Image 1 (cartoon, helix red, strand yellow):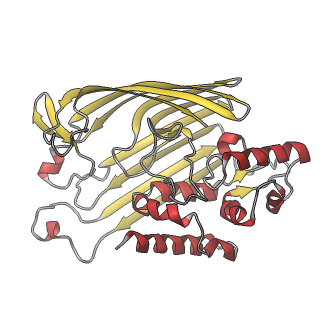
Image 2: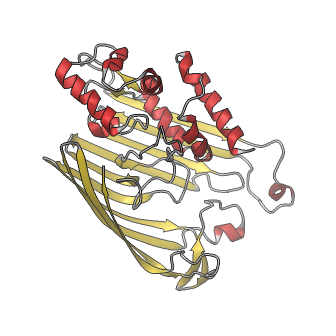
Image 3: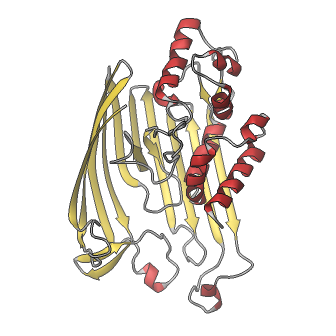
Length: 364
């Protein structure tokens, strides 16, 4: 299936699930970068993010600049105009009032409409908590060759279980268990996290997590809205800082702890992680490369599981003033075995060694 066909299927699915006004289902500029994200949706990262945003729309009467940054259709200028309009004219009474914001057009409003809400007054919640649970069990009628010839000896059933719990806006946690077809263990992939946010200026996270800073040159999720080639609608990445991870890519998250503190215009994030990675072992002290498939169906694949241990320590410092944010990010990753590059001609710039330092500077 071509990427164009995947984009069309993804767009049609969004239209059906969305049930919004007809302008959403027209050919729109954002389909350019949805096409680039179609492969990522197969890994569930982007699909989960969109679904979570639908289930928890952003209240534009209380949203901060960082919260509005989650919406990729809003430029930094338009984001600031929404906040300025709110301060000068009072709270929005209905969603369509956003059209009165300077620079807001109907096309942009139609794009963000499903993901925003308006709460004029705080309404006491009947339930102090929210629980989201998703389970999938699937199998294939046409068995892959590996099951026919006995290469894969375990069940061909694929099992996915994911649960997320929110307690007000202060506590959040989640867990994921997943088994691919051909794998023997029901929890071949297991993830969890607990996030605490006692105030708007302090946040703590323990477990599996991702970090998104700046424009993603140093740290970012491997999936998301990519930059568009459309000069009229260039997509700028929206950093979300630290966030719990519950997707099925086994090599896309850190495991450890992260802390965020905001003091006036200064934001500080520190993080530490220790996780096991799949790799091809060459000797007791060296591996030839990191395996990114996450599959453990055969004896050869199982021999690569958790061979390499990675330790990551780093931090970020950012300062914001008058709509400008300047930040710097640094981390060091070290490995308990030497990573060898055995294909130097083909992978001349691939990492080799057991210690790596990365630093970046950004502004927006």
